Image (cartoon, rainbow, N blue to C red; front, side):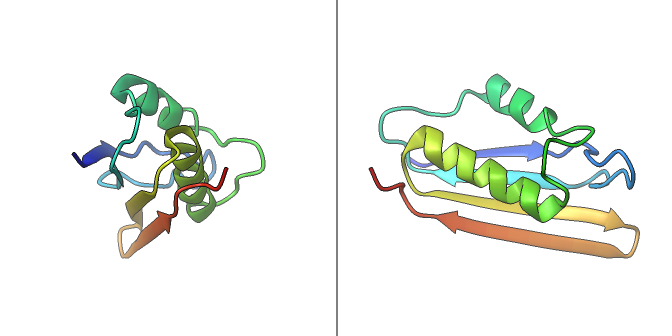
Length: 102
């Protein structure tokens, strides 16, 4: 079984309003013992609204989400974000993180 969770990203940055509407996040993995609960994952993503700690960029936010999902699941995780940052600016961020070492 392979799982893919896909979400619309909210505007997280309190200054720029990025990412803009139409931005998406996809998290793919083959579960071992557990799966990510959708409502909890949505709440976790929404916790980035307004900024979060030391994370100051969309790239860092996507990387931290990937790391946290990988660490919780203890399996390889692939994350892809399609970010709309301005009417004429888009960015795609892809990460593939291997299973964590014990």
